[in-house]
Image (cartoon, rainbow, N blue to C red; front, top):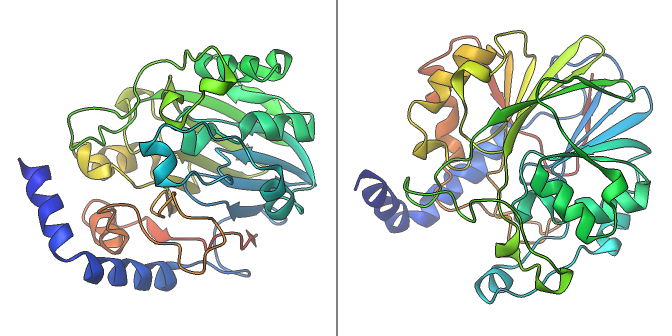
Length: 311
């Protein structure tokens, strides 16, 4: 009932909450020349939702790239939506030499562009069995790496490890949306809701002396989260309220210098819209206070979409 009441309060004050979130996004924004703890030459670009481009020593990783934004109407009507190569041209023209694509889970807002981008750049995509199945539907089985959590992957200048995790129970704390494995057998049946979650991973990335941790969904398996040493936590914040003591639990493990908030934008809107909008009841403006209540060390920041920052 608590989550129903919280949603009701949000809906009653939605315009005010979104104004507060918009102001927070500006206030927290890290810009070129910022003091993010990044190695010299390490560049990070937020691609919206949980998506990032990370570039180091001339090589790039794409993480959960979501550029073909699916309209809400397509989700409701279960329409088949395909990746848009024109948007890839537009938003990844400066991606350079892509070394690989990392996928934390296979909901459409994390995975719809992955196969097309793997084909475009001729690289492997790393993730779950559901991701491997998705790649096979596109005829790209040879470019799918079903990851082993006990392995470390050297991908260009990056050292990557996949950490088993969980998806937050976004349906008012009761259930994970589109849970289970991706089992669709034909591309012409691959509607947004057919992109089942699959196994969820946090992604631990080292580039030079900088360590990043990407968590696209706000949940965790406590004992598996790496202990300490994280410089930048790429933290998807949607759904955190449905995970008990989320910030307390994950920040105690990671002990990050910076929490870079993401997955707060309205991911049904085109990426280039001047007003990005916000996910339902995401409350970005509340995040600094939530984190300060459990950690005096972690600083909260955001990135404006498609505006790279570097060390």
